[in-house]
Image (cartoon, rainbow, N blue to C red):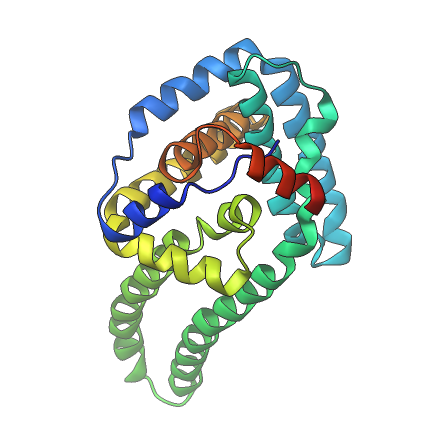
Amino acid sequence: MIRTIDQIKLEKAKTERVDIRIGDYLNQAFTIYGKHWQQFSLFALVAGLIYVFSVITLVGPYLVMFPLQMGYGNVVDKIEKGESFEFNDFFIGFQKWTKFIPFFLILIGIGLAVMIPYVLILGGFGIFMEHSDVAAPIFGLSFFAIFPIYMIVILIVMVVMYLPPYLIFHGNLGAVDSVKTSIAIAKKNFWYLLLFVLLFSILSQVGIYACGIGILVSMPIAYIMNYLMIKDVLLQEGNNEIDSIGQSQEL
C-alpha cells in the first residue's frame, strides 16, 4: 500500500523547522542501493529510455517524469518492510498519473513567467546595442545585475516545486493545494530544503560527468535519498486500516 501523509508531521513542517537529516538519508540510500543495485539500475535504465522516447511528443517527458519518480519510493517501502517486490512495482506512480497533469501545467506557467521577462530584457538590450556602441557597457552591467536575480528566482522555484509531486501522490492533494502547502513548508524550512535540493540535483547528475553510464548509479541513489527524506518529514510510518481501504477504493 502507498504511504499516506501524516497530518501531524505536515502541520509541524508548515509551522516550524523540521529536522532534515541529510547525512542519514544519504547513508541509508547508499545502503539500500548497494543491496538491490541490479533492480534499481535496471529501472533507471528503463525509466531513462521511456523519458527519451517520450521526447517525441514534446510534453511526454513531463507526463512520465513524476510517475516514474514515485516508483523509487514504493520499492524502498517494500524493502524496508522486508517484503519481496517485482519490477512492475516501480511503475506504481502511473496509477495516479493524471493527477500530475494540472501540476505540469502550473510548472509551464511558472516557467514562462520566469523566462519571458528575462528574454525580453536581454533581447531589448540586444536591439539597443545594434544602434548604439555606448549600449555595450550598459548591457554588460545589466546582465551581471539581472542574472543573480534570475538565479535567485530559479532557486526559490526549485525549492517550492520540489514537494508537490509527493503531496499529490501520497496526500491526494490537488495541484494548487499541493503548491500552497509546499510554500508554507518552504517558508519555515527554506535553507535546509535548498541544500537538499542542490544535493539531489548534483547527485542525480554526477554519474553523467563521472563516466556517463554512472547515472544508472547516481540517479537511483538520489531518488532513494529523496524519498527517505519525504517519508521521514511528511509520511506516516505505516498505513492504517482506513488509509488502506481508501486507497484500495481509489486505485
